Length: 635
Image (cartoon, one colour):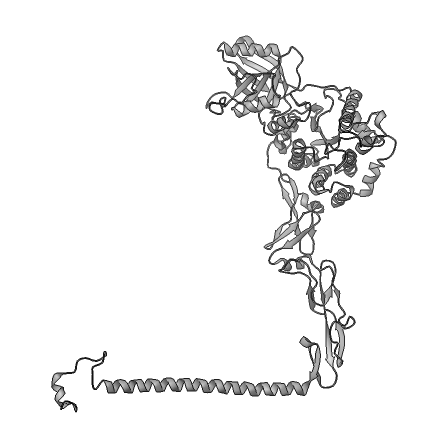
């Protein structure tokens, strides 16, 4: 096994070879910065748009420049030991543009600290006399990622000389007002905007992959609306590298590349010994390119957005579904021909150039006003690279695309957020549906269709929403028998749906099978499961059996036996006799109880009457004295 050090060396060689081959050329996207005060500095200057935060494409922003007395490089939090939001705009005042020095920490950290302190924009002063550069991350950085995901204010780099002039004016107590203008940041040569997104199918590369996948889902509705209306032309792209000739036959190149080292991608887990390989990513990237080409041939290029979002949801690496089988399931659900896409992809083991992937590598090299593509994701609008890919957002990207239209020529989607789509009407949006029960998982939303198992007539369906939705909970058997097997013959219906219990579908008594697709009748007679007594005669029926006895015998199903009818009748007669006797006993016992109760009551009343003659009772008054003489015992 190759050592870890050599693995990293190989990765470096791959990166180096790609860099040498492409002779990387970077183009800095600029916006105009106009100083309106003081008079001595009034005029227009260039500034380089930062590749994070949200540039206000198509608009402008005025503010007052503030230079902090301490922490001038903004590498520390401004609220340390003091109140938060130090630079928050006061009512009636211009927004605060924080002027900070370059150096000592990441650009992203500086902008985040300024944003947290209440700044509305950031101007970073270069510490060298050099042409302007784009503030970005040259490599993945976990520390910077947590800042970039939350930065929402625009930022720009200004040259050292101009920055020193601004700092001096602020220190001298002058009011320094500037205006950032993005209105010409995106050219608009015609009535259609052309834009491209350099992306990747790898979903295990950390925060940037998560951000990219979230953006694809959020922006899909707007992208498809622009494309269907003829307002835009979108093209997806994928970055690949080649393996140095000296390592083409190595185990590492074979696992990361296809077409004999011509097209490679980094290992998703950065570990050659586990998980998916780089070549798996290249193959899926190629499949997504072919999906776009085949969809474009049938004049439905917007299907690409459905495929990449559905593939991410249904075929993630974490669930070990990132493979051809899962991809073809998605392709079929969208109504595309798998054979055409397979033909487009060709054989990844061929020792020759692939026309599509070769074209992608050529496209990575910058042309005209667009620089080389070296960072993922990269968005290019009208051949001008979009800045702010550190945090792609639907509204920000839509605003940049709409800035590519001449004023008054932009479509309605650029003037309002109220976009309506109706993707569920076309092939049910590629979602699950039950035609028999008239139930669908397709739900139309502002951002495009969503495949989500529904609630129908009070019954909740559960599943992935694409290929499977099953009713669950009370009442599920009322909806197409819960998706279970069912059949009706001669007015008699049997169903495998179970309203309760752990099993959703279970063949009823008299049947066997999986309960979903089939339940076959059991021949109880042939399999000797019933009606097996010597006098029994068995006849199989659908879902059961009929058992008869010879002569005057009667079949008892509970005991699977035949007994004489006279015996049954005798038993019935004795049962009647015993019933009568029991009834008589009950009546006699009841009569005796009533008699004893009445006798007791009568005796009690007699005793009370006798006692009342000799002494007063509690319920009687005193007996008068003059009556004693007449009493027999008085003498």
